[in-house]
Image (cartoon, rainbow, N blue to C red; front, side, top):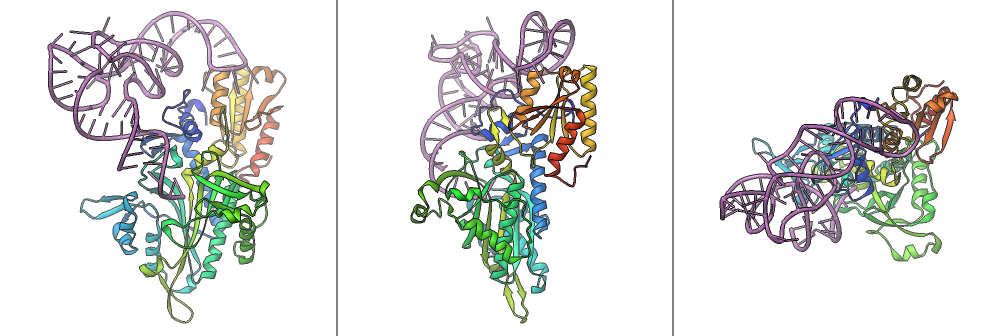
Length: 453
RNA sequence: CGGGCUAUGGCGCAGUGUGGUAGCGCGUCCGUCUGGGGGACGGAAGGUCGUAGGUUCAAGUCCUGCUAGCCCGACCA
């Protein structure tokens, strides 16, 4: 994309209403525009990040054997009357009437609807286990939305639901989600720590939240510092293997890590003093096992091998996709702006032409632009008639991980400059070498899309 | 929902005390110079001051109602 043809309304000054850094940077980098309290338009640059995250979430869910679908944002109230949650949910639920005065609601979650779909089409244990998920906009009429997309009223969320014949199988589904979530966060460039949590209104006794450590987080967390050293890394995972999933879950849950709702002072103080860590975190996902809480009242039953009708065991699992955009920025920025992890960056690299209109720099930039695209890279070429300072400031603000600077000075020695946003490290490379370098870097993140030299 | 506050060109703000010509910085447009960290100079466009009513010869400014948004708290992916 050429910046001169793009829509990137960056702000030089701090928007006054934004308090936390991710919100400020999202506004300044032209990612979002607020339309009402807790409701945002996603401008092109922000949408690209949202889509990258969404894509990674999809890939990891599908890898774990979970099946994508799509449910509507508006739901009939009757489904929620069946589960007794229509009244119980309270004013957080946005209720609307259609022209026939029928009660509808903008879905805050989808347990009821997925259960309805399940009971309509599944009647035998032979179709189990089954995990369906979707990524869809939700609405919860928060009392006080704030922090930009971190706590909006409208938010984009992946929510999944597993259906299993018995508790054992459902717990495997729980573990599968646990592991797939770990992988997802690692690909997003985030350190998210699973913590034993409180089940809240969804119910059930088995639940973990995944928290990204950040000073601006809304949750108070307590953990053994050693948990931050555990990584999935590149290990091969067989999601069908109960044993492997269980062992990974055990590995990640053997050390103390709790949110304040489940915090135990006595257990915490048993940790060696120097490893006791108290911090704040942003909740970016939660998984639940809740057994037959919805299947029983809503009649989601299957016939088992003995011909008996039994309610299925269920769980639900969520990842806050829109919230993750903010969470990633909270975890990865500096005083100049955003620093996108390579896995989610909206463009793979910037190209900064330091002398727009100069024959040599224009030609070189155009060549790099075309060539990098041939390799599957998506560059953002700053071809505006701006001075160097303005281009660098924009580049730092929007945070692309790599930036290629093309100047007359460099071209005289046959090189361009590759700058790493995170370290500020600069290297002089030939145009061929710079393409080669970038495609090697991104092959690790998006192997299917990047060509080899 | 309790407490505090705000609303004036695209953005950030002043002007309201003491009613009388709507202003500044940034951005935008045109021109010239400039060209490695938001450059300089010259010119220009752009605002029924959130909204409805009231007081007044006269309201951005005073009064009343309403709406929207922000912050602190209790609640949430």
